[in-house]
Amino acid sequence: MSATLPPVLDACCGGESFYFARGHVLTVDAHPRSATLCDGRVFRCEPDVVADFRDLPFPDGAFAHVVFDPPHLLRGRGWQAEKYGLLPSDWEPYLARGFAECWRVLAPLGTLVFKWSDVQLPLSEVRRAFPAEPLYGNRRPRSSKTHWVVFVKEES
Image (cartoon, rainbow, N blue to C red; front, side, top):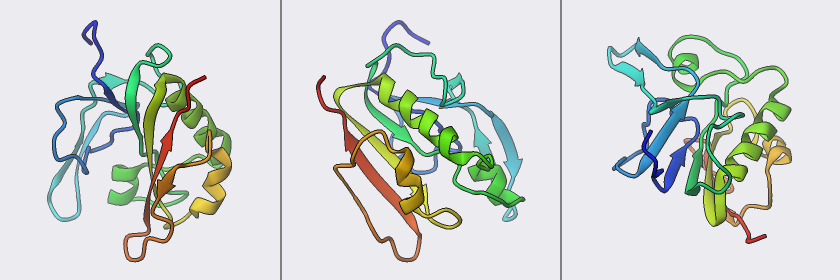
């Protein structure tokens, strides 16, 4: 890692599947892996930094923008569990700690984007772990059941 950090942190990068350009993003994941999916494609998780999103190795306020796309499945196996990861049974403190760390490394007036799939655990329950009230997001995604929620960290 260079002495100067990029402005964007992806705290739980997985396969980095939603990026158009990744040039200014530092990716983090606790579980580097590679797997062949059911359709024959190879899934790769190759983070820049291997670390748990609940204990990020960066100074306070180091990033202008943080992406937080944690595991969102409570149960499952196969390619979905491999690609997206599974939450532990005590998911609420697990996610709350992840949010706290993402918030800690986020600079004042920075943005945090949280991605969540409602497939097994509704966003209404996950909101209890939020570090602040979100600024905006899509409230009722239809077919994908994927929420994008945006926070702005106030100046202290």
